[in-house]
Amino acid sequence: MAKSIKLSKINPEAPKGFEKEATIKKTKELVTKIGELSEKLYAEKKHNLLIVFQGMDASGKDGVTKNVMLKIPAVVIDAHSFKKPSEEEFAHDFLWRVNQYSPAKGQIKIFIRSHYEDILIQRVHNWIDDKKVKQRMKSINAYETTLAQDNNTTILKFYLHLSHERQLEKLDERLTDPTKQWKHNPADYEESKLWDQYMKCYEYAINESEIPWHIVPSNQRWYRNYFVAQIVHDTLKKLKPEYPLLPHDGKTKS
Amino acid sequence: MAKSIKLSKINPEAPKGFEKEATIKKTKELVTKIGELSEKLYAEKKHNLLIVFQGMDASGKDGVTKNVMLKIPAVVIDAHSFKKPSEEEFAHDFLWRVNQYSPAKGQIKIFIRSHYEDILIQRVHNWIDDKKVKQRMKSINAYETTLAQDNNTTILKFYLHLSHERQLEKLDERLTDPTKQWKHNPADYEESKLWDQYMKCYEYAINESEIPWHIVPSNQRWYRNYFVAQIVHDTLKKLKPEYPLLPHDGKTKS
Image 1 (tube, rainbow over the protein chains, first blue to last red):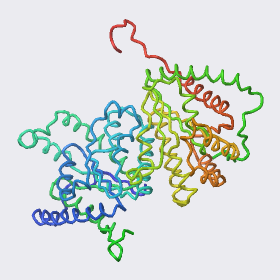
Image 2 (image 1 turned 90 degrees about the horizontal axis):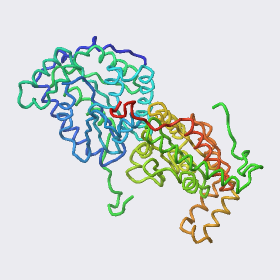
Image 3 (image 1 turned 180 degrees about the vertical axis):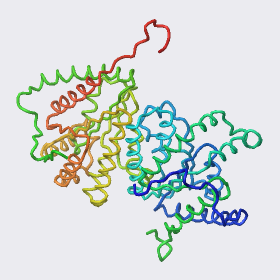
């Protein structure tokens, strides 16, 4: 990789000059446009999108999906949240379960967590050794390249970059806010203690990826949503999806 | 690749010194042992096998599967015959449909035709260009490497090597033998005219594969079956599958 990133050097705060209310308004406009563009993508069936969200607990993977993808019709979008693998999934190679959710032409697939977990949580806990990590990184790059080359897939990978302090605040919110208590999991506090190890493993995954990552400053939800919405919007716009038209006489199908 | 094969230089006949009845008897013994070993493989759930059969029409992909895998219990084996891709399959990358049938630990999966068709029939008919062929070959090698490294999969690839003359004889048998008429397809004679192009594409696939192929002399069914049975048997035997035993006191589960 040409450039090597260090997460501790990247600011997780919204940059100066962004005003909250104005940014939320801009995000709403982008979200509407994303919805319109996604319908054309679906009608045209030339391109497709795979959007990967990774980040520590409480970084907002579900939240950003909910807010940014709000206007994409259900027939176009599918969001899959990868949890602990099942016994059947563990009996296969690590890409088996992920591959089943690869996007078809015209689709937008969201991975909330992804194949990267197999070199993150598994590495932090030493369930796999460095040799396996290296092999898997190679497999991941090959898998993503196959999608891009063979099915015209555009892959957007977002790391939701949160400070450790902000994570603990957000985990604590879950203890008090009655609309968030369902998200509370005592194990999240245990994983949070492994913060530095996680950062190292994330840096490896980001630096060794052939298809680049977007590092999303995520300490403020409103800025995080805006950042992602802008990239998704610009990506869709560049694909120039168009409704396929009938041929000139309007009666025969070309 | 270290060695480059030329199919026209390889004899598709049974080698001298093999007597038909004695060979059939030996094959039967191997088939029984394959069945026994496969039960241990399933019980142990450490290893798994992917067996790929490729070859021209009438080369005996179905026949060899039927005869050699006869004693493998249904719960251990799954044979999938890859036909023309569906609309949904075509809307994905070419490995998507194949990946769903990747073996789990303890399983033996048979691919009758496979991901190689995507650089064989598609290349012969110029549905894809050479750049795409090269990309796909790279994707195939990466896919097979992932299975081998990440899931302990042993991949056996067999090219059923038939002479063009013998193919035409066997296609003609389908016109007269009432137990074979259901296999007759006039399109097979059309594909047969593209023999030389197919051989070139097969040679490319075989020579560029990282995991090597077995070239099976297939002009005689009995020798073809023996050849494959021997390799499947020896492969299973080398994996040394064993029934897992209870721990010493026989009461607790280790």
